[in-house]
Amino acid sequence: MNILYLCDEYPPGKHGGIGTYVRLIARQMVKLGHKVIVAGLYGPGYDGANESNDEGVMVYRFRRGFNFRFLSDETSLRSRIGTRLLKDSGLLQQDIKKSLAIYKDKLEQLIIEHKIDIIEMPDYNDYMRFCSSFVPFPALSVPVVVKMNGSMTYFAREANLQVPAHVVKMEQAILNQAAAVSSASRYTAYKSSAYLSYNKAIEVLYNGIQTDLTARNVLKNPKQVIFTGTLVAKKGIYQLAKAWNIVCKSMPGARLLVLGKGSQQKVIAQLTDEVKASVSFMGHVSAGELYDHLAASAISIFPSYAEAFALAPLEAMACGTAVINSNRTSGPELIDDRVNGLLINPDDVDQIAKAILYLLNNPDVCTGLAKVGNEKVKEQFEISKVAAKTLQFYEKVLNGVS
Picture 1 (cartoon, rainbow, N blue to C red):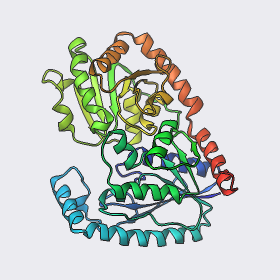
Picture 2 (picture 1 turned 90 degrees about the horizontal axis):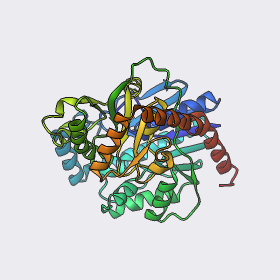
Picture 3 (picture 1 turned 180 degrees about the vertical axis):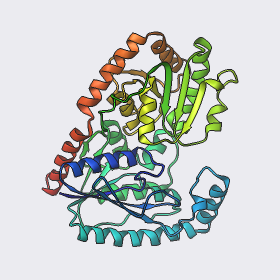
């Protein structure tokens, strides 16, 4: 089968779960003997060559017209002001429309050149953040399947926030023109179908990872806790910081590692002066460094408010770390409470602190949860098994069954 994945955050640039998952599934499909292309429309300054070969995956990064590097750091004042001015003037949306038209032509060329059978794309497309009115994603000449990994509408509605009508319309259009739709979790399928008025069948295909990560030659620190993820409110990092004040008061020797892109100062503002030295911010790191830090930690914690199906807890389980996960959205689809991890309410700072202290004070329990968690991720979420199920889904679509 010849497969084209659309992705606007394919590594090595700073990426989230979608970029990580697409790289994993694309590489695995190559290992299974399929031809795989990845293409994306990229915003300013994203790292990576315009064309490259990633372990047999042919990667094409097409750039939007306004590819000014000074816009690439979205946290900088200059970038925020520049983006706002371009958006308010309408110039940014004009550039997006022009870039999408060129992108469609490039994709059609890839479809012909590589005899593409099927395309998979996510429900989230980054360009939509910068549109002030309806700008549809272009229709393509071969079947397109959409995987729900968390659209703008999904995450906004989960946070009880308003969604611009044109964004909802754009995301509805993507689903309605799809040959079929899958979802990274049951919860996301159920909620997204309601938020976006989609009434057709949705196949649940959980995200997967490489699970052979436990043999990393690092020494585990029994008092080290780790958080991995973007440093934003949605991920529960500010609640974790507040809980850490309680943890350190009870166990001064505990240490917290925080890995991920975002504003560190906003997190530090939640910490008392007495505990700041116990927290280390590592920023965005490579996959290998991430796995080393996970393997060296006794506990990992993910107090997120909303996920589709996060890869971070899977990676922690694969690295032999006991997981404390959110009880919100898809969290219970991964963690069976007190069997292969712990579930907590991200709004309950005391409960977060108690869960961390419970595992720190009971190393045998911590080790046991890590062991069972590692077994579960290998049994159910190994990328080779996920790829096999995904291929079955593609074949159903191409055979007109789905």
